[in-house]
Amino acid sequence: MPIGGTAAASKLCPEHAMQPISRRTKLFIRRYLPELTARCSGLVLTCIALSLAIVIRRLVLVPPPHRPSVIEFVLAALAVACGSSGLALLVEGRGLFRPVTSSTPGELRRGRPR
Image (tube, rainbow, N blue to C red):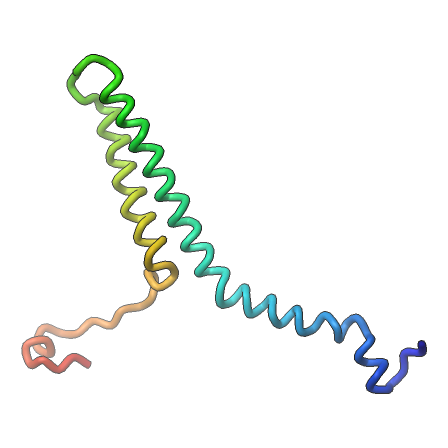
């Protein structure tokens, strides 16, 4: 089959066949990949918080009763930080980083925000 200037030949050309896929890929990367990345990182952080909570529970309950150690406090702080940021990313996604407009206190008193 000769590749010439005809319309049928241009449809068979591999460069033209790949163009719609390329557009779809760019659309996916621009729209959905940041959202998917934010939500997956939120899921990972939430799983880390859950595993830290399990480790803390084992540290506290397995040995005989004792005063909390510094390691247990640090692990608890990490679990809270990972859990709160992970759930925020998981629920809100990319919208968590959306710019927010603020209003002046006078506008809030008048009840007319911009």
